[in-house]
Each structure stands twice: as structure tokens, then as C-alpha cells.
Amino acid sequence: MMSRTWTGCLSALLAICLVWPTASHAEAPLPSEPGDDLLINQTYDAVVGLLFRDYSLQGNGHVDYRTARHILSISYDDPTSEEPDVAEFPLFYWYDADQNGQWAMWVDREETGRQIDAVRYDWKQGEDLLTLYQNLRNPS
Image (cartoon, rainbow, N blue to C red; front, side, top):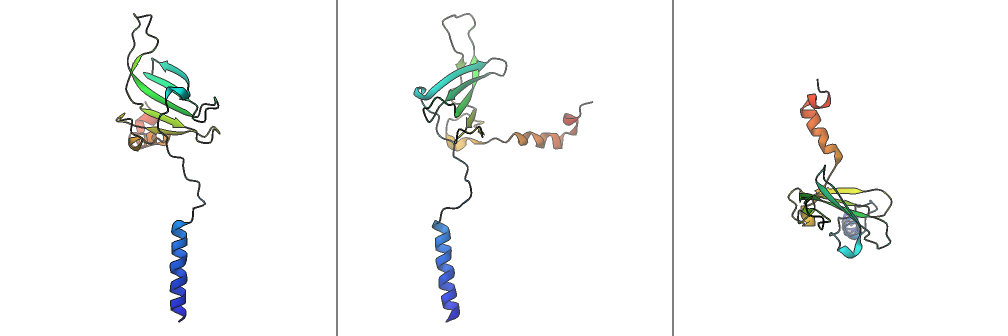
């Protein structure tokens, strides 16, 4: 009789755990790139070859979303051309969900424009290269 009650309690507890929201702080998912109505600023860096676009998703003027696209070409001869020709979709995405300066970065290496293809970018990924090639850390 005791084991039947225990099994029933265990089953109920498992069911509750499956539907109960967890207390862990889940990372905010990357939203889709907004339209020009939320665009705050746009700049490009010809040296690194990227066009940066800053957005305010909450519409309060505070930048909380940024993208960077590859520059395909720049027309220096055409004074009417105010911006470079860029890739259709971003390479990098940054998102500050809480507008608290804690930015998360994603990279879409194939530049598909689909959020599912963008993966979290961790600056520590470069540490793998330094581990494999020690002379990169201390060039002689």
C-alpha cells in the first residue's frame, strides 16, 4: 500500500516538474532583425569591411540590437552614393534584451538571414586556436 502511494506521489511530482517554470535565467532568444522604423544609427567601417546598423527594439531611443553586414563594394567616385553595397543579410547580431549593457552576440556564418542559423558567438572560441598553435600566443 505504501509503495502505491509513493509511486503516485512521485508521478504527480514529475508531472508538476515538467510544467512548472524553472527558476533558471534562460537566455533571451535572438529576435528577428527589425525594420527601418526602429533604426537609430547606421555606420560603416571600410577597414574591417562591415556596415553596422543600430536599432531600438523597445522604441525608446536606447540601442539594444545591432547587426553587421559584409561590405561588398564602396563607390568612392559617386558622390550621391551615401552607403556601401552590402550583403543581403547580417553576419553578426548583438542583442541586449534588458538594455543593461549585457550584450549577447550571434554569428550567422552563412549569412542566411534565418535566426535559426545564427549561433551564439563566444570570444573564447579563439582560445581553441591558441591551444592548437602555441606559436600564435607567443610568436618568436
